[in-house]
Length: 557
Image 1 (cartoon, rainbow, N blue to C red):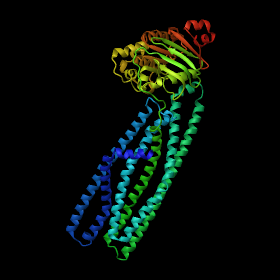
Image 2 (cartoon, rainbow, N blue to C red):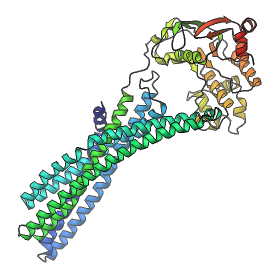
Image 3 (cartoon, rainbow, N blue to C red):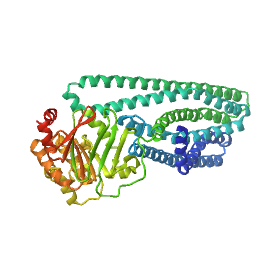
Image 4 (cartoon, rainbow, N blue to C red):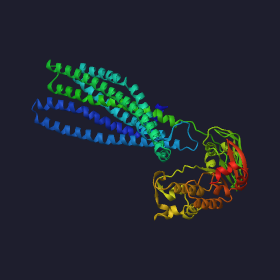
């Protein structure tokens, strides 16, 4: 599939690439024509003392150099445009695949995917440059060979035989370069992923005193990436060294034979200058061909990594059914996944249900199942009696929204983070902000809802981020809303206020709150308790506090 990806890159930009190749080929042909033109000037103008011929020769050289300069400028522009657009196309395709709500079965972490979407996309797009530069270099070699054949057949044949042999020798190193380039990219991606995880969890690591252990892990991963880079650099150096040495030997042979022929009278002074000029010029397209081989080897390695993501199977399957009713129930029947064991529970329409999990792993497993992030699990998740797997993927996420505990905020305004890009009025946004008790987050800034939030919401405190995330979930107003510990970073007074306003805001809709907050549990119609992966008890918060000592210890602060 990597060849298909590279071939597709060329096909997508064939028009622009064709123009660029023709112009670059013209440039290289003009470059090869320069020593030919100088040889003709020497034989027909300088040697004969013909001033008229000399004047015409100078004018011809001026035209030749004008064509040479403009052809390179315009040709390079077309090739670079094709390269940049293909790189953008590949990045968009990776982002589209990663953001697919069905997920992807690559097992890669976000840092690895970031490396593929950036570095590998750029390297795979280098096939555009490789094709353009390679064809131009072959054109230069063809023009040079024709000129040499015209001057002297043995010399021309020597070039025609020597160039393919030279290319064959240099390409023997290319597969090794491809393997080492792929290993380098994989090691860099792993290190990037680890760095991303460490930076995002730095506060937690410092809190538990694990920053030194984390630093050691990163150091080991970074050293592995360094070793992979050094192996790739060594192979690249070997490739360039073989290319340079072979080219040098070839050029020395051509120059030696040309000098011998000139001494024996088979070549004129102008022809000798042309042969020597072409012999020196040929080094450039030969080096370019070697560099193109390096580019193509790098492109193949990165194309293989891109294909791994683009051709990945979906993590979850989906159907085509939809939910017509505005009153939606959520039911789990015999659900087993990770630590969950035959969980049976339901959230009826208009009901607010609290869920307390004594083991956080149970809560995480339940949320993963409800969010549709699980490829396979036992039992059934029913939305208004319809298996969730039978629902259209967008319909499922419209009906059931799972707001995770880790709030994801993006660079932009508070309004954009709350509305998620949807068209909403200021009154609707303000109502959601009020329900999340986040008015102070907005009012403290002169710009209000237009205040800019930095990446990951790092300019906000933990409680502020949590409330902005809650406001976003409430503004979406899904028929079924699942919240995971929405108030752990706020003070007790704010928590009570959120509990009251959340209950009022979600009236007439179904809500499941996974929490141990007594303020939120006290507002729930029912509380379900998960113990050791199973439903152990059900009742109101007050009933469970009175009758269940384990529950009382878990929720009372």
